[in-house]
Image (tube, rainbow, N blue to C red; front, side, top):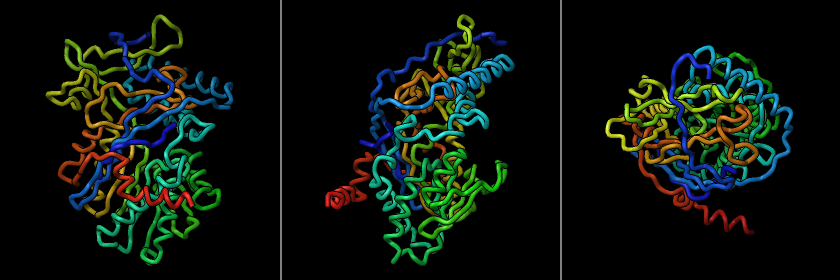
Length: 409
C-alpha cells in the first residue's frame, strides 16, 4: 500500500566484460514496512516547501492471473538476457527503463497496477481528502501569485486520475472566485491503460488516442466534467509554455536510478549481469573501472558508501524550474524520499508485497527513494526551496482537521 502517514514537504554471466560480483544489501525485508517519503514544491516567489512522509505498505493477496505473469516474465527476462549478452552488463537505470517502460513489455505500459487487484495503493485512492487539500494548496498558490486569469494545471504521472479529480472538485467550489479564469488541465502519462482510466475518471468518456506517435505533442484530449479542456502528453516539455501549477505525486520514485558503491579502488557503478552459475538468473556486479556516471554524479566529500542518483529526475526537475522561473507558478512533488542520507533504497513490489528487483522482471513495480538534496541542487539559481516540513504539518496547514470534522457529519 502506498499511503501517506507522516511525510515531509519541500515547497519546492556470459559477459564480455570482467566484473566483480557484489551483494547489494537492502533493508526492505519485511512484508509490512514504514518508509520515508517527501513532497517538493517550487515557485519563483522565493517560496518553496519539501516534505517527508511515512508510507505503510501492507501485505495482501491479489487475484491476478499467474499464467499471464509467467509468460510476461519469460518474455522480459529473455529480452534482458539477450541485451546483456549482446552489449555486456547494463546499468540499473537501463534495467529499470526496460522493465518499467519498454514499449512492448513494460510494467507501466499495459496494466492498471493500482488498487487491491494491483501491486500498490496511493493516497488519492484511499481518501479524497488528500486530493482536496492539494487543491486548496493550488488555490492558495494561485492567489499568492496574483490570481492570474490564465494558467495550466499540470500533473505528472496521474495514476487513475483520482488526485486530479479531487482537485477539480475543489476548483468547482471556488467557481465564484475562479470562474472567469481560463484554466487548462495537462497530464503527462506514458501508459495507454492509465490514460484510458484517467479519461473516464475526468471526462466520463473513453477517449481514444489520436496518435501512437510518441513524438506527437498531444496524443489525447477532451473536456472534464467540470468543463475544463484536458490534454495528454508523453513528455513534460511538450506542454505549452505559460504560467502553471505542477503536481507530481509518487512520480519521481519510479524514475531510473544509477547505483554506485565505494570500494578500495574508488567509486564503482553497480551493474546488472547474467549469473554464470544459475541459468536464466540475473545478479548485481561492480563495473571493473570507474564509469562516466560515477565521475559525473558522485560529489567530493561524499560520506556514504552507497549512493543512488537519478539523472532522469534531474532533467525533469530542471525543466520544471525553468518553466516556473520563466512563466511563474509553483510545483509540488510528493514522493518517498530523503535529504541525501539514505543509501540502498531500490526495491520491488508485487501484489502489495516486497519483491526481489531481479526476480520476474516485468511483473513488479520498481521504486527507489527520491534524493531531494539532489533535486534542490538541480534547481539552484532558478527557483527557491524551503523545508523540509512533515506532511502532517503541511496537511494541518491546509485545514485537514476542519475537513475531517465535516466528514463526520
